[in-house]
Image 1 (tube, helix red, strand yellow):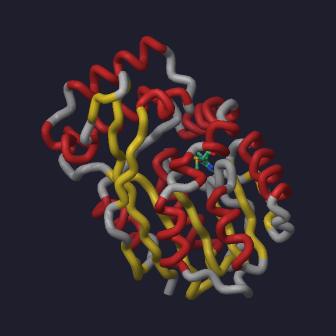
Image 2 (cartoon, rainbow, N blue to C red; image 1 turned 135 degrees about the horizontal axis):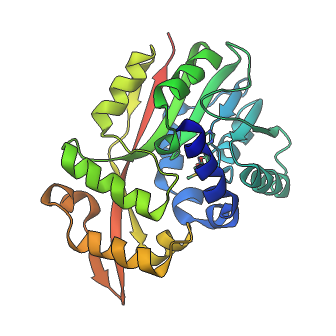
Amino acid sequence: MSDEQKAKVKAQFGGSAEGYATSDVHAKGESLEVLFNLVKPQPEWYALDVATGAGHTAMMFAPHVARIVASDLTEQMLEKTAQLAAERGLTNLETQLADAEALPFDDNMFDLVTCRIAFHHFPNPHKALSEIVRVLKPGGLFGFTDNVTVPEKQAAGYYNAYEKLRDPSHHWVYPQVRLVSMLEKVGLKVEATSDTLIKELEFHKWADRQNVSDANKEKLLDMMRNIPDALQPLFAPRWADGTMYFTLHEVVLVARLP
Ligand SMILES: C[S@@+](CC[C@H](N)C(=O)[O-])C[C@H]1O[C@@H](n2cnc3c(N)ncnc32)[C@H](O)[C@@H]1O
């Protein structure tokens, strides 16, 4: 099941590196700056970005740490990251093919591990968090962001079905309270939590980034017309300019390994 999920990730993201390189939500999303400000990177740190995608998070931190490894399961994403980093003259950023659930690094190596808007792809999130804790130095920081859903089970199921129809490699988005308990379960102590960050997406841009078929776009729009009441404040769908806009909620958590 896990391997199947990871094959889906590579198939899905292998063809969309360019889309993620230019995606506003990823390249300029508010969580990038919020994460940076809450982490307060230090010049002597050795850092790791897990599931780096097109490398936006790693590139944001690179000028402020000694070295950073940008890692991902998808080779095409790492090629894009390396290209963008070279264009920006970031010589202290290196790329590394790595599954978040089996990190190819020794224990206690990093002062900082980041993982931004990717956790919802991991089929075994506990394993990924255990790996992150293993490679962190004692006293090191984990800078995390991901989308969040509402705690109501049925509504959360609907939310995740919507995301999965757009991107078959989507695994599960959790409510914030669940994320905090998962981090605590592996021994991390959450030191900072952002406000809920609200990002507005234009439906077609969002769907096209994952090459959604016209038939599935229709199904997604139908799902949005019929969302459960509990999801109305989260998605807040809005029809205008011949398209549909909706919002997603994201949270930033910064946790320390004691
Ligand atoms: C939305 S992108 C990440 C965005 C990026 N972190 C940023 O800040 O712009 C999701 C990434 O997660 C990666 N991914 C999914 N599952 C993974 C896993 N098990 N291990 C490592 N990377 C994974 C995908 O290859 C993809 O590049």
